[in-house]
Length: 533
Image (cartoon, rainbow, N blue to C red; front, top):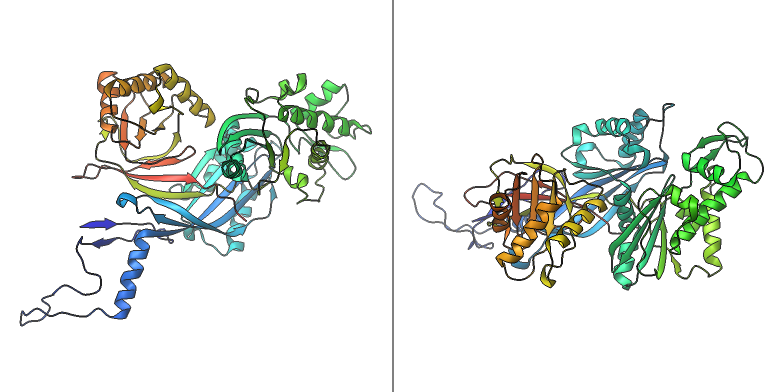
């Protein structure tokens, strides 16, 4: 007997149990009459159709999802219907996305702020409620979602206020405060740049220019290999109808100071002042694209380490709000510097001197929000290790993916370096609960596993407290867990599971142990990056 329990589009669970040798076209003999004799009952066409429908729903799941992007300049959301299908290989219990249909896209909202520079949560709630109404959806119609907080929204007071908007739906939503490195990666995937790089096998540099920051991501064969963020954006300066400055970000003030010009809130700048600042900011971005330092001002405005271009990009893609002007999808002037900033960048590419081809990746201002959340349910293998100190279930654990070449030889120092790099890419630190995903290749030699375990122990703060979740696609989870907990005496409680496929940017829930099978159910909440039309 085996049981299939897929999610349904209404969020409920439906379970179908089938005997291994059951016949789907003819019923087994049933003793239903008082005379005790066996009677065969033919299955009607309606019953056959119902069985076929049940079987289809066992292998196919449709979810209604919402992606919500709340940023320092703009906020918007998108509803989609996702079709997942069970992988047939090796009777896998995992589901993969086979299609997605966009149901409704919201208009772009200028993120509302109060006078104390905190987000106006009440206005934001009205906007989100209105979007549900306009899309013809109720809260209970949505199965899952991702709320991505960027820029000013990450600040503690704002994040707390926004969290209250979704408190009643915490079981459905993945809420991710996207730090600079994570936002670079989200934009690269959501824009379509990653798919472009993977499809063409060319090196792509995605430049996501938002309201307050620009995020760079270098991609090779669809994989992000370097990221960088700088405080240059399209709404650093905003003016009213009379030309008075109504918004002035610190980075714009620094740019004005570096040029020796005056720019003050509430005042009209002298002619040519804003144009000079825009030119300086555009030059910084063009410098970084060309692999240069960005000058003294560019170094001052860096929010991360400098962009490391180990090879020149062949294609340059743009996303974010400013990209809408670069690719002529937007013509309205919002009284900020987005339009002139885009014009300067476009002009530089028009001369052909940038050395790479300007390419539209497909998605601009909606690049981040395209990562609406999807649920995939898997069951671990039986060779797992669960520390007695771990209380299950665990929810919303971010996945990191160290790039360790298991089959090519590695040292513990390699594991330390790659683990810390993976933490940095997701803007996490070593004291948090994380799921460390490993792709295992080759035989389970003790020396290799011990080297891997040594590196993991050195990379992650061995101070106890937050659990360490190790997820391996090979059958060595129990051995790795034993080495970490009993041989290396890792102070952090360890749960080590195998037979599960994860990707970077996933989040996982780990359910309670199922006896006597001794497996745990794992819900994988992946960020969908299939470009939307």
